Image (cartoon, rainbow, N blue to C red; front, side, top):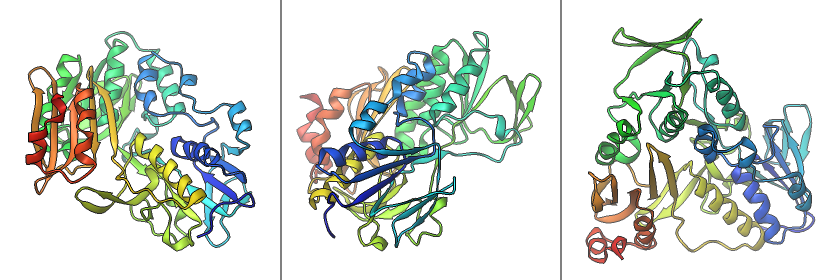
Length: 411
C-alpha cells in the first residue's frame, strides 16, 4: 500500500471524536493533501462524555464540549460538509454520496460514523428523550427546566449512560427512577460479582433503582407518560429518558461490499481488507482485530479512549507505514452515583474477578479480571491511582498469581 502524499484526498465520514482526532493526527503526522470532513450534525466536532455528566447536571453549557472551532478547521485546511449524512459508499472509486444529492470523491475514506441511541418499539417512542447528541441534551435540558424540584423522572436502562443521566438529574433536585430489565445493572458488562458490588450505590445518591423490570409499553398522556409493566402495574412520570444502549451507524454501507458484522470489519491496522488499503474504520463503528494478553479477537469497543487510539494509529499507518507493536489497552470511565468507575482492558462478564484492594463497605476498591489464570482487566471504584498503577499488568502476559505477588496497586 502506498503512503499518503500531497496528491491524495482523504475523506473522513463522521465528525465526532474519532473523525476529528483523525483529522488532527493526519496533519500532525505531516499529511499535506486535501482533507474533507463529513458530518450529519450541523455542529462542529464536540466531545460526547460531558453531555451526560457536566452538561446535563447544569455545570457546563453545551458550547463547552467543543473540540473544534472555525479557526482551527481553517488552520488545518479542512473542507467540511456538516448537516448532511453519507448515503452510499463506492469502494472502487472511493466516492461518498450524500443525502443532499451531491458526491465527494477522494483517494482514501475513513469511516467514523459512530453510533446512535438505540430505540424500543414503544407507543410513545417518538416523544421519549435519548441522550446521545448535543441536540438531545439541549432538548432534554429545556424540558427539565419546566419541572419542579422533586418531580420524578423515569430512566429506562441502568447501564453507564442511564446511571450517569440519573446522577445528573438528582443533582438538579429531581427524583430519578431507573428501570433496569436485568437482575442487576451492568450484569452483561462487568459480570455478576462486580454488578453486585455496584448495585448498592444508587440509594446513597438519592436514586431509586428498580431491577428485573419488564416494560411492555410507554404511553403518553396530558400529564406526561405512563409506563406499563408485564406485571400489570403502571408508573406515571412527567418525563421519560430512554437509555438502552447504542447501534452502529452502518446501514448506509449495505451496498458497499465491505464486510459488516456488528460494525465495519477491519484488520489490526484498521483497514478494510476489501478496499486495497483505501478504506479504514475507526472508533465506535469499527469491528477490529484486537490483540491482547489473552489472544486476538474481533471486537467493537464504544470507548472514548479507543476512538482516540484508533485515530492516531490509522493516521500513523497511512502516513508512515508504521504498525504499532504495543498492545492497545482499552480504558473507560463513568461518573455515577457520586462515584467514579474506571476500567482497563476489555474483559468478558464471564471472566473471573478477584478483589485486590480497598473495601466494598467503603465503596472504594480495585479488582482484577482474569481468564485461564491470566489478568485481562482491571476495574476500580473511586481508586484512580490504584487503577493506573495496575496498568502494567495488561502490557504483557501476567498471571493472577504474579499480579497478587507484585500488588502494584499498593505502591
